[in-house]
Image (cartoon, rainbow, N blue to C red; front, side, top):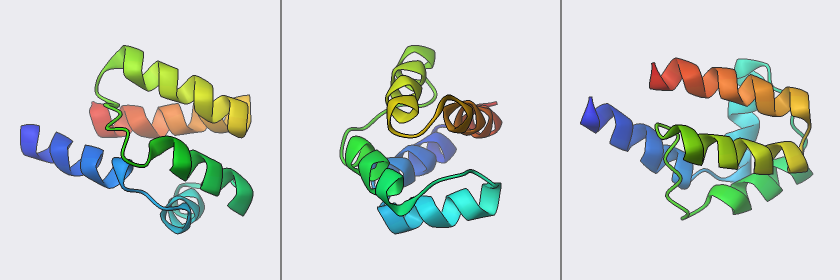
Length: 84
């Protein structure tokens, strides 16, 4: 399980705007290029651990400020699928 977590976290912490746009289309999340760029800046190199509830919630609050409450909720549901 630790290997799986590390792969997910590494991918998340190195995500580019293009990656985020690709994932948003794949998972039906509303995201503009500008928003994707801002979220990518937020994530890149920060080593955010989405498996830790408090870190995930802090990240989601920041994502909500960039995008919308609905988008943040959808992202949280996606994160829950990866962390369960």
